[in-house]
Image 1 (cartoon, one colour):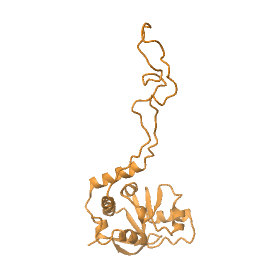
Image 2: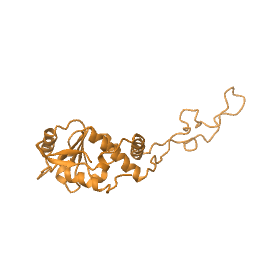
Image 3: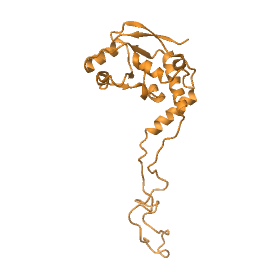
Image 4: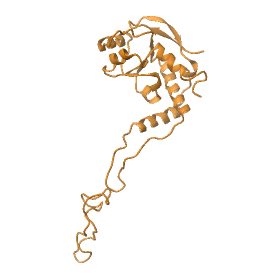
Length: 213
């Protein structure tokens, strides 16, 4: 049987209960799977644009700086040797793609694992409706205060809820997501998760009847 949590209104009062889908919110922890997905998400966000020039790419150095013998100095063939100031870099970074592949089932399992932990830690709140007729950052801040949500807050709503997005996007330590955008790494970055009821149901629908496995 799934875990039940309260549904609240924007004033923080209880407006009912909802049973969280057991296949999504009642999984045992999978630390290795979560670790793999976090590595993937961080790798995908690396720009990979760091670049250095090797000795063949550095301008100059076409003439031997001094003759081979008789000067008393060490032999040198180019002033652009990696040993010289202004010379090329040895084994320096080049633009590259850091991403790697993780199966979709593994990503879903990781997401369910961190959502399950959030549910056990009582870090999930559900509201019936944000009831925003127009965008208002002040009202958005008031809603978080009424729900007693501190720290970093992830707000999960539907794409068509433009008023919700605009009301929360400028608040410090608050980010707005849609159900299809959720991943294990982002869930771990936040202290609390605030779901619109319809967004929570949409998320659960995305896992079907058998969960991630």
